[in-house]
Every structure is written in C-alpha cells, then in structure tokens.
Amino acid sequence: MTFVAFLKRSLATAKIAVQRELEYRSNFVIDTLLQPSIVMVVEVLVWASVLSYSPKNVLGGFSQAHYISYALWGAFFSRIAANWMYEIFMSRDIETGSVNSILLRPISFFEYYLFQFMGYKFLCMASSFVVPISLFFLYPGTTQFSRLPLAIALCILHLCFTYFLSFSIVSLGFFLHKNRSLTTLKNISLWIFTGELFPLDLLPQSIKAIFIGLPFASGVYIPVAYLTGRVDISTVYQGFFSVSMGILVFSFSGWWLWRKGREIYTGIAA
Amino acid sequence: MESAAIVTQDLSRIYRTYRKPEGLWNSVVGLFKRDHIEHMAVNNINLCIPKGQILGLVGANGAGKTTLLKLLSGLIFPSSGQARVLGFDPWQRSYAYLRKISILLGQKNQLWWDIPAMDSFSLLGKIYEIDDQTLRGRVSELAEVLDCANQLTIQLRRLSLGERMKMELIGALLHRPEIIFLDEPTIGLDILAQNAIRNFLKEYVSTYAPTIILTSHYMDDITHLAEHLLLISKGEIKYDGTLDNFMKSTEKKQKVSLLLEEPFLNEIELPNGLKIPPGVTVVAFEIFDKELAVILAFISSKNKIQKINIEETDFEDDIRRFLETQSRDR
Image (cartoon, rainbow over all chains, first blue to last red; front, side, top):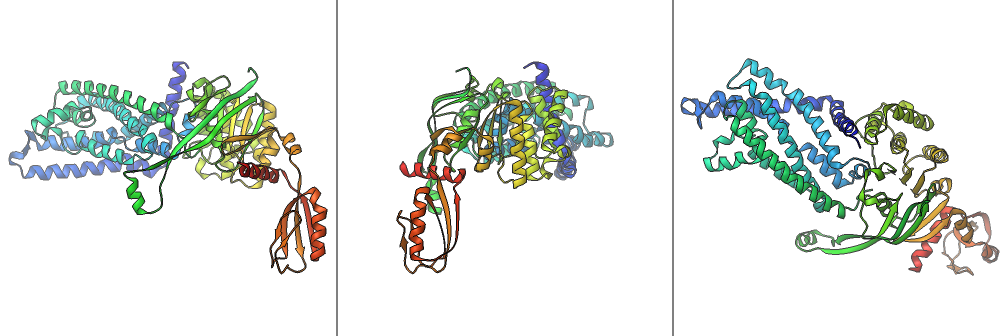
C-alpha cells in the first residue's frame, strides 16, 4: 500500500465521521456548542462566587480574571480533550460483534477509529472554538491570544494519547466482554487529572508536581494555564514530553492487549 | 493444491464458556467461582474446495456452520489444525488476503447505518483502493441488476430490510472478491426479495465465477445456487459431495396426509411401527415408497378414508431426515 493510498483512506475515514455527525443537526449543535457553553457558564459562576469571598479576589496567587479566563477556555479544551464517545462506540463494537465487519476488511480497527475520531474532533474544534474566541473579544481577561496555536497543538497531541489509552481499555473488552465501568472510571479520573474540574495549581505543592508531570494534564490544565498566563513555556515543553511518553506506553499496551484479545475472540454475534 | 481455493486439515475450534445455574444466589456465587465448560464447535474438519465452486453449507442451529465460516474468513483463530485459503493463513489477516475475500452476514449490517449507502461505498473504494471511476461503474452496474439505483443516496437506516440487503450485497462485491462467504443472505426477506437476491447471485456467479460458501436455512437458496453440498452436524462434516449425489443417495419418502371419516377409539399401530393416536381425524406421516401400499391398505381395513394427499418429500425434508439420523447415531 502506498502512502498516498493510506492518506486517501485516512481522509475518507475522517470524512465519514464528519458526515455522520452532520446528519443529526440538533445533536451536533448541542454536542459542540450548547454543552460546553453551559459548563463554561457554570464554572464562571462558581469561580466568581468563590473569589467574591476571598480577600482581594485572589486565590492561590491568581486573580479572579485568571479564574474566569481559565473557565472560559477550560470548558472547550476539555470538550476537545475528552474521549468517551468513541471509546463507547469501540467497546460496543467488540461487545456486540460489530467489530467483525472491520476485522474482515483491509483496514485495522485502530486506524479505522483513529481517523474517525480525529475527523470528529476536528469538527468539534472548528465549531466549538467559535464561542471562546468570540468571548475573548468581549472579555480578554488574562488570555494571551498568541499562545493559542501552541496550546491547541498540545491538546491535539494529548488527543492522540487519549486515543491510545482508549484503545487499551477497548482491547480489554475481549477479556472482560463488558468494560463500560472502566470507561466511566477513566472519565472520572480524567475529570480531575486533566484539570477540567479545577486548575491543578490549587493542589498542594507535592501533589501538584505529580499531577502536572502526568500526561493527562496536557489535555486541559497545561494548554489553558499557558493560554491564560498561569504557566510559562517550560511547562508546555514538559507536557509535550510526558504526553509522548504516555503515547509510547499505551501504544505498547494497546498493541499487546489487542493481539492477545484477538486470539481468544469468538467472533460473537456473527 | 493449485486449483484449490480452500484447504483445511484437522481444523478444530473449542469455545470455553461457563454454566450458571438459575437464581440470584448462584449469580452471587458466580462472582467467586465459575463452572467452566468447553464446547467443541468444529471438530477435525478436512476440506478441499476447488476454485469457482459454490458450496452450500447446511446444518442445524449450533452445528458449527458459522464457526467454520469465521475460521475460514480469518475472524477467529482455530484451537488446532490448519487452513489455507487462496494460499493464505486466514487468521493472519494480511491485507492481500482480505482484499480477495468478502463476507456477507444476513443478520448484521456492515455498511454505515447513519449515512447513505453511496457514501459507504466511497469509503469502501478507498479501503480497497478502487479508483473513483471504476467504483462508480461497479456500483451502477450492480445497482442496475439489483434494481436499487434510486436508493443509493438514501440514509441506510431508512431503507427496508430487502433494500438494505441489496446495498450490503453491493458493498460486499465492490472489490470483486475471489471468495465470498454468504451467511444467511436471504434471512428475514419476503419471497420476492429472496428470489431477487438468488437470481442476482446466480447471474453474478456466472459472470465472475467466484468461490462461494453459502449457509442458509432456506433450502431454496441451496438448491438454486449450490452445486456442492457440505452437511455439518455437531461440528463434524457428515456429507461432502455434489447436490445431485446427495439426492440420489437418499431414499425417497412420501408425505401422506389423510382425512378419516371418524377417529379411532384406541391408538392404532401401523405395520411399520408408526402410531395413530385416538380421537383425531387428520393424520400425517412420512413413509418410504415401498411401505405405501401396505400402510394404506391397513388403514382402509380399519377406517374409511375420506381424503388422501400424497407428495414426495423435497430436498429440505431429505436434509432434515439425514441430519436427524446422524444426530441419533452419535
């Protein structure tokens, strides 16, 4: 197979995901615009309330403007960084045997879903980011707009990492048959580890160092903290490094689990 | 063997599962301890299927038909034994192999549910590396024969079962596979749709001569399409030969239906051992040709027959009888 053929196939797979999303218009609007907007509003209100009780409107060394800017971007970055929907699709394919139709075509399950996932996330990003970018012009806060491209680049690399992580969890489905509880567990953990729930710099110093050192922080905390002036470029480099390491670890575990899982697979429901 | 499309040697597959006695308490016990059992789904299968042959794979539910298809298509690994399909180890799933085969599962959608079939075909074109012009040509050719060109741009989920099956067929044949595994291709379809699919497959085979392994519970599918028959029961091959030879080798029976003037008061045993229960006026049974005269004479001597209907058993009856005998003999 030539690289051109691979590229065409990948683009076509990503395109299918975009077409499928656009087929259901209301779902698309709620998913990409309404849902993160509501999360953003709630977080802005929470931080505004918390900081109104704090002397000089400062918490952990950061001002109210820092927190509101963090909430404004955080909700949208976390929408991009999360991968629960495709993980559920993939797990369901193994649970119900729909994976069979992919296994019998000259394309790997990994590749098939990776490019759909990327296509879907590209669509999400292109539509969701309209909201924080528009709001930035009304309320710049502490946002440093020139930092946005690097923040997005880190988030995209983190997206690859979450896909590798998801692939390992999904491959466990061959052994466990039902693994939705693992997806839920992972989602709840990521809610905290990524910094979606609160900025990680509010944690005690020793715990904070560990959390920021993990690849998960590069999904929300590091890119948003960098964008809103809470951390400098060295933390972003650290993020790129830890995410790359995470990809290495989970690419190996995913490959191994998939290989072993396929050996015991019974081709259910075919 | 150069001309063989599929060769297997002692191919077996064991499934491991567990038994759970009914009830809540046993579910709780099952959290800690499970009674695992092994089930031999296919057992030492040896096959040699030449290229271009249409093979009907027939057996009761749970006989091992689908497991054999799954093994040959590379979907699952065998527990022991070997198979070569077009010179490939199927479970290695090499792309070169997957480009040469196709599987159609009548009970499963393989195209994308939320988009029109034409969009699915475009993606399949990229997956199988078919250029756009060739792809469009093949789609319109197949759609014309299947009379479904108007449905190509309608979301798949909005099509009827028969229309969806036609789309699945197009999707399965786009890359001109050398081997096609058809698992219940007409299941759930009405008679017209069944006929349309059968006629289409017949025409397709005469044009492109692929090797086809067909499983179906509709014996019409087998008699219309297959030239070679493989009967499987409890994971073992019970008959491997031509359809004609099978028909010749099976002793014909007659299906007899009688309407008696009045029911028997007691159970009546016929000379061949069959029994007619008391209190019924409609009686039906199957008997060999040679027994017909004796049995009818026997019943006439004891009761008045108002109406009689005799017809020769068909292929489906012969298969059923063959498999029942095999099952009893084990």
